[in-house]
Length: 303
Image 1 (cartoon, rainbow, N blue to C red):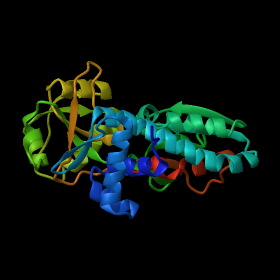
Image 2 (spheres, rainbow, N blue to C red; image 1 turned 90 degrees about the vertical axis):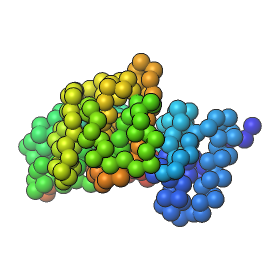
Image 3 (cartoon, helix red, strand yellow; image 1 turned 180 degrees about the vertical axis):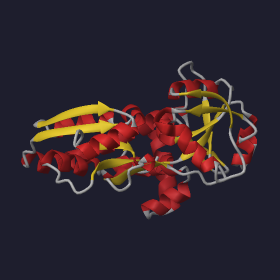
Image 4 (cartoon, helix red, strand yellow; image 1 turned 60 degrees about the horizontal axis):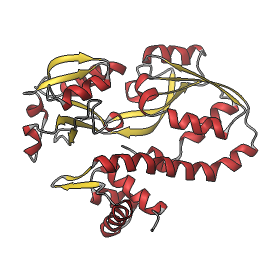
């Protein structure tokens, strides 16, 4: 049986990230036919449909979501294999006090931390989960060396320096039977008419309020929760809709019900994950190594 190639997986990840074959081809600087052929061959190798085609582009199937997670890990491992021998020879040592916000800790950072620990065994990695305000204060005071957090939420713009690793688009989550799925175009005006499940963790409700405030509409919030899984379950069971980032999206709730996603016609800002540190502070070798390590290319492309 044929095995998937690195190129095929890169093309598939680009399509999954962008939601459109044409946009993926543009970002990859290749033809649309090359991307289409790569995805088709992958589906033949896997023996399952990975993408559902629709008028607005493509959406991951359940099998596609599973394959996407594995493909990202494979490409991250390839990148690590290329980088690790050089970095290990540098014999990086020291303490790295790394802070992270809740969403980052649950949906983004663990595989990167695991690979970093293997690549840099002499670095004493000390992890802390904390809210944004605590992280910002800890970076400025020197309690933390570095943070992986939602940099789009950073308040202390003067005391901190940050760089973006990932821009995760926000889309509308709906149940599999929701009537809005039949509409070719959905805007915030349509969402405002629906019962809304509001996520509050990591200041998600504050972020949502900012882009809602740019319109004359408001979400009809019927329930507020700090649990992403609670939001997922309520949406899947038809209790309401929500707008959340692709980074925390999973197609199935814990009780086995389907969650669908739709792109919104109105502009909704991305959720940006990145690295932050105190401005004008000299960084040790462990911090520098982690920053370099997190720039792994394709594994951190927008989702």
